Image (cartoon, rainbow, N blue to C red; front, side, top):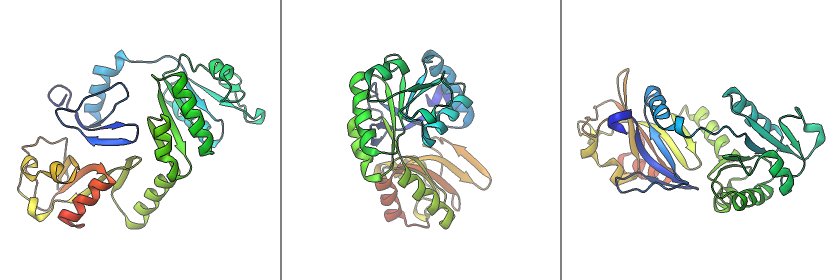
Length: 268
């Protein structure tokens, strides 16, 4: 993919468990690939692969509250059809897009399209209910993608075990945004427990190639970009030399980030 499309697989995500990608890493049906590349590279990837896997069935959204409606708006902006399952009549905005009833009712779910959809998104503010709905949808459709909201961070792992492919935690996202603002940080949460961050090239790694640095082997972080002055090289080749006084953009789990900072120091 690097040679033909310009993107690299820096890791794989399987229901809450992230691992750096290695040549022997296997891709399964529920594997989410974490790709690194420029906008042009990612468009090229989409053109090569995604045109063969386009779903025309509506996304099923469970919950018509604030988060469910925001999800629907985001899908509509991308011309993706959706159906919202909502229990409260006063929340029904568009009878053609909403299905009135309980998401725990099989007949209601089937009316919304759970048998045909490729994706279900669970958005209620009650984590216990989200766990139940995730298990229910996973039993009905083992093959679909399930995204779930977690109000409390302690329930993220439970939702993954229940069968969610991806879980978005209010607590983690909010804490990340606040810390970035307060510390003027350059850290971005890619997914629960997975971060993209930028540091100065550590002195001991300056003028080493990426391959010679062994950053991935030592820390679990992957180098996704190298900055030199105003120039940024995305998905650099392993033979690229890390510049003294430059910067590197890394991606890794919380533990991997901690190992990097412990080994090389917070300020590089």
